[in-house]
Length: 120
View 1: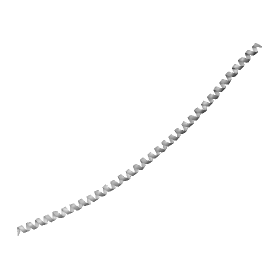
View 2 (view 1 turned 30 degrees about the horizontal axis):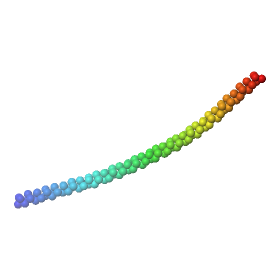
View 3 (view 1 turned 135 degrees about the vertical axis):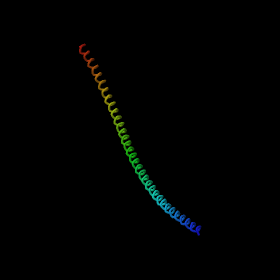
View 4 (view 1 turned 45 degrees about the horizontal axis):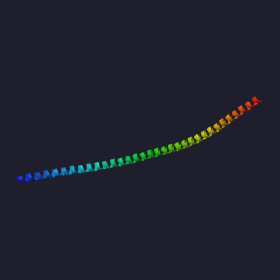
């Protein structure tokens, strides 16, 4: 009989341990679910941040490309203006040279006329 009571007590102790372990298991499963939820939230936040960062990078890239295009257009315009100015300057120099040549011709003609006058 004593053995029977000890056996029953052992069974009760084991059943109590089983309930405690089941309880602990339930708590662990609940904690795992909570951690999985936290992980999912963090993954979603990371994804949102990556998307926002990508959009920001794309926006900055587009802005940079637009600025580069504007600078290229300005460069092209300035290059064309410089070329036109050089051409105009060349024309002015040619006209100025023509005037200088004509002035020298006139001076030579005047000198010739002065000599003729002195000869008379």
